[in-house]
Image (cartoon, rainbow, N blue to C red; front, top):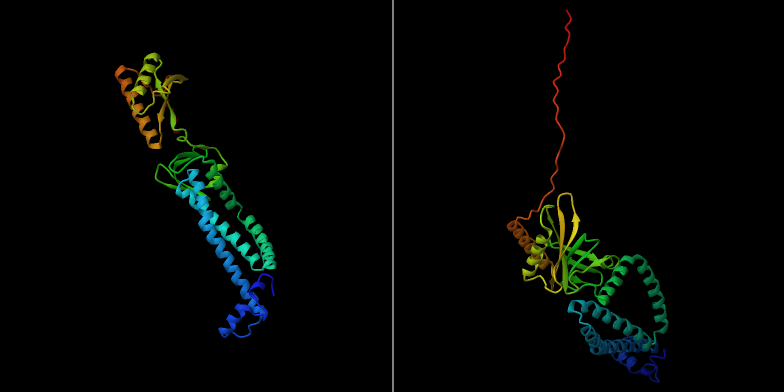
Length: 309
């Protein structure tokens, strides 16, 4: 008779559990069977109590903690699922001990450790992505709806979904990329919209014979006229290139609350306005011209053959 089940057994060796089984007409009911049944009942009761306490107290506390960190619902769901698994595991461990299954629990712990080692070796990439997902949740390098770029700008798009293993990104060609989280944490990732404003650059090429000061004034003036370009920081122009056929004037300007759509639209409208002003003021935007020099000589060669008589 186990110690955990002793309280449910009485002097006759059966107790209420054994007598109840006898009344149901079950054969071979003795003290060992009664003790085992009592242990199972204690296991179920302990597991049930811990599970309901966890659901009623622990889960709401975790949810409020996640709300204070301003995590959205989708980000909270995987963390709450892990919490539920943790409560279940803790409940099973406590219930085994409460039911008097100590030796069995030690054996199960050894088997679980060996299994965890084998699974860990076989699932290194999955575990790496899982850990990377935890870092993404805690460090918050990007959020759902952000425009991100990675792999030296090879890939870019808007974040649609973040899970503990993968992140889903919608490209600007409407393609859905499923990216392992480790790819986003092991290399440089660019988040152009994280700072609330974005600086854009564009190089305008003018001819060597054009007035640099006049072109600079036009570039700055059109930036100040555009409603979506910020006045503070003010737009600026720098001479950055002396090309083979043009002088490069780099315009730098800022847009507020950027998105990919705003970035493309604003830059397109601004460049179009500057080009139209250049045309009005007679400022040329040259294109590369190659000049070939040299002469062309034609020779007329006549072969004189001899015919045999």
